[in-house]
Amino acid sequence: MDTDLVITFTQQQTHWLGLTANQWISFVAAIITFGIMIAALMQWRSNIKTHKQSHMPFLKSYVSHPDPERGKEGYLSLTNSGLGPALLQEINVLRNGENIEGSLQVTCENLVRHIGEQARIPLKVTRRFQYQLGHPIGRDETIYLVKFDIKGAGESDAVEEALRDQGIQLHVVYLDMFDQRHEILDPKPERSL
Image (cartoon, rainbow, N blue to C red; front, side):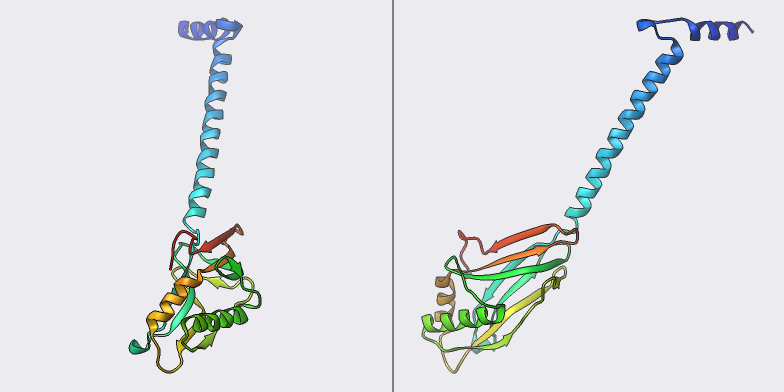
């Protein structure tokens, strides 16, 4: 019974800043609870950021020259080497930094024709591709924009040199699965094909 009196007396006794022991315990518990809420909120935001990064697409363009000796066609393609799907919004083909006007099919045909003229080798488009707005490119998936080959006999090295001299770049706008917009200009101006 004496301990009950001591506890009751201690609870009602005022301490620093005129607060009782119960008030101090409540105040410290509120501060700890607030700290736990802040830590949980920071962890939640970190989880969202990690989740988005683990599903981020990354598109890269590739240009290949035809090699008739090996039966290989040339192509212009896009590959998603990221971790999530990409939804195409816009594809522009640039030659020496200038946008080639027209639809994707017309643009690619004009590009192949121009490369053939510069290499003085007749090139033919063997396959054309068209993609709708929002076309998905899955993880590790490659889509082709155009495939082309050499008509008759010709030097594939001259085509490779013409491709390099043209400064071909793709400007691609795409969305990730969280509707965030991304743009690439590939290859970068400082990097050659």
